[in-house]
Image 1: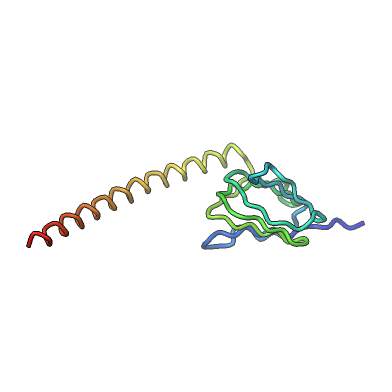
Image 2 (image 1 turned 135 degrees about the vertical axis):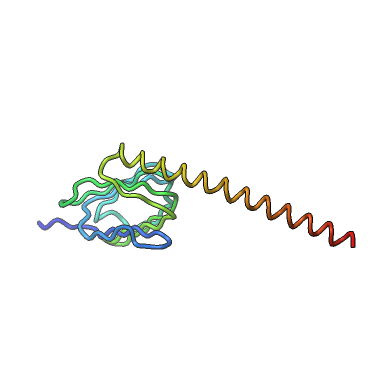
Length: 134
């Protein structure tokens, strides 16, 4: 009996991160817990939580994908995952370090954006007050 494989696509807002047609099974973190997806599993749609999505294929073995929140849609043997951000790795320790580094960079960027927004708001209010006084 031939092995039935799934087609996994992981979509980001700006690119297709994964397009793999030889996936035997997938494990994803949902709001209801971790679920395994096999080719014959019923079709479904589920919300994904930030966490690790794992899939397995013969060539790469077990592959880990750190994902942000998103959605997973399974129809037949096609599995479509759409998330805001994701990173691939074969080693969980290395993947964790990469994710932490990227989140720290995002935190620094958010602080800079808040600072710029505060300056813009302050400048706007000062101009608004001076406009009302004239």
